[in-house]
Length: 486
Image (tube, rainbow, N blue to C red):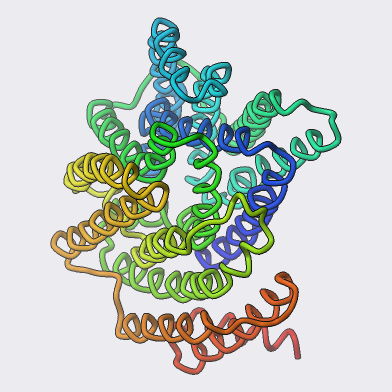
């Protein structure tokens, strides 16, 4: 776990730096510097691009991670990377042609209720292709276990660019209606830098030549396309459907609640960058003993960290909303339900990596497609009746079923699960801290109150985790920190 912990900590630091910038943007700069309609526009366009980019990438980013270590010669590795460059370009061109011939239809669709979206529809394509190739180059770096720079580019750079653009709007140096074009430029610049970094790590001989097992690779790629689309649809379908049923301002309000809860997913995202290629290697070499050990250790470690973040969010959410303009006030239910989804994701740890790097990915794809359909129907039912809270209910139900299905599938096929003897005790500790500190309000300014309450909660929680000895890796890290302090 040494390399994993080392890079995971670095990735988590850069990810939290990105989330810190994102929190500044989402909770304060967007809400104070941009009109609510434009904030909703930004949230909608980015969510729509997130739904599109998996189709453009065509699953190639996952294919590179799965197959690269199985090729022993540079020639074969180069052929795989050539495929990674050419196939998404071909798919993107096809989608671009479809978009060109249906552009008037798309404009007519968005003219119904939310006219503000119409001039920016084409940006969805630009953001989609920029994100698709960025993810491919990031995967290119991860196969050499170089995830830290890519994670910095993914989590920090575009948010820093957005911060700069928001200040330009505030100082009247950039018109609000041009803000989204600036975001598009930031995404393109990020792509170019990541591409240069990937080519510096491995510069393939560029030619129209593909791997010898092309049929197997393409089959996996096509199925991973479905998988990526499933995962993205489950994440962003709710925001896109809110735009269809409610005024676009509601996308911004809902997006704030989602962003707050998404902070819980940071540890998993940080660890995934390094555990995904290692999981693929263990599966390729059929080292199931090490795989199970990684599964359990990563789960308990992620659960410990994410449970603390969950406690801090839920116990401080009312105070946090005191800092945001009144028109963005949100029900605690949205934050609670999405936070539970993200906490469950962390418990699964490397579950996704095991399934999508194994021969059983077809089964989880079938489950995923059914779950997207279920999520669509749930949103269709809940949003008109309960508004944005209904979208949170639909997302919670869909993800709970999806995650539980994946745990059962790994247990049946690999005879392993992520749980240890400490898992239930940790769950109880999380529940206890949440209930005790939720009702404790400090009579101070919101920022001071959050800092004091969060600090006390963290110290007590970390102490409990240490003395209950949930994780040897985390205890070793804590002892190292204490030794440096002394």
